[in-house]
Image (tube, rainbow, N blue to C red):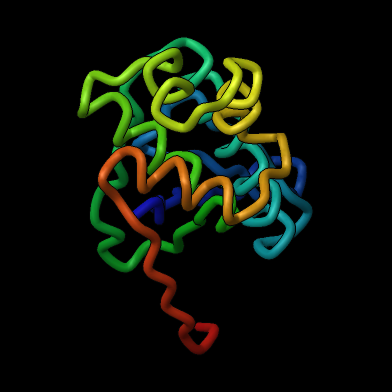
Length: 141
């Protein structure tokens, strides 16, 4: 679900510029296409972190239509799903903490995209929101 198309363009200094049409805050570059796409993932995660911190709706990815795409890490994707479920259900951090029997700082860490969170804790949070995780492993492109 969090697979964002990217726009790649040659720059005048022999680097590749990257932007994400769906997340206008994302701009980065790389010495070649591979490096540019790797940097795009980090830039995307940073931009989405600002959306979460600002309690804003996350921008949804548009169709790739033949463009290359980047996806946040699996852990970040799960955290984005938790955040989205909370927003759609109008459930605040305090209410999620109450449902889980957690302290508020634990929920803050759960929603921190840079904080490493155990999978069982993310599963518990999703269950408290009426969701569950399904994992699909595919061949690399």
